[in-house]
Length: 451
Image (cartoon, rainbow, N blue to C red):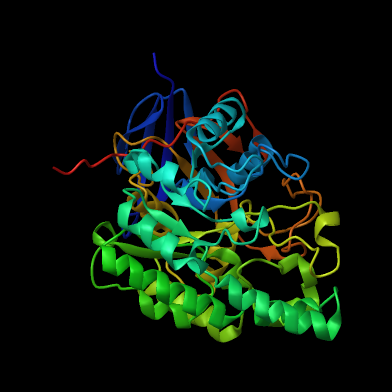
């Protein structure tokens, strides 16, 4: 017999609507959604006044395994994800070794099957060394191919700075091409200007000037032009400027778009004014920019030019951050707190619950063709999170679950909290307690083979 869980009288947020209903889980799947369900379940959760959301699918994380497990690993970061209502993640290729072959990709899937508490997917990395091999593959089954993070291994790995390579990839790859969109040559030029003025420890407030609007805008403009030329599938990762939003359309459904983009939570939450207070804690690539950019990104998210919300969760040991500017690693952890940030925006009237769920749950599933996840639908996998909208708490060292042990949000008070997270019908997180007896599953892609 399959185990059953009945969640009673929660406010379900799904497919543009919010409504009070019961939801029944049988085994791994959602069995029934109805105004009232009268069954004797193995577990009953009284959820009146709480939100019931599809589990968040975070479309861009760096969980660091293999190779950098001193600062994060698949178990620790998936645990943090569950506490934040994230039930599935897609991890980038800049582990060690870089994910530049199917053998390494398959090994990451094996590691995740043993260790991850959340569902998982991985991008295949692509750069100058392996592009020809990637183009020989049947890439239709991959979630995406990407250059993201590979510049940490070697300069010259950003495809946006290599138009001939990028064009070759876009012209011949069946998978989504997901790129880190900065013009590296512009960044290098700016680095030299500030190195000459300040030496090796440039004040971090100049980070968004070094990794400038121009570097992002020119890279995105050129990449979009190439994608249009070849009618290719291009996804721009972690958009950071209001100017770039002009390259994306909102007059067709996401399922019909060829060129898509996302915004990461920190680019909606922080601005360049926060460098004075937080310093290298908010040093990310691409850089956090101006208030105008923050407002422009939110506007584009709301009007559907921006398709997804991600975290770009990128933990580093604090000693790797607390170094002179050119040595300080870029990136910070966020996967535990992304939903909380968006719920604060909702509380302030900046975004509806329905739009938030669309961008964090529905759209990642649509964009990456993920089977039976991202929605509250009968027959779908029971990836769910329950949220208490009236539970105030403050981020501090005692409740941070990231292996690196710190967060740029320390001291921030939130007014909502995830109380329960289900992964494939398994109650993996409940009121601060984890049940690690079951692991997550690989995200399955629906492959549409057109004749």
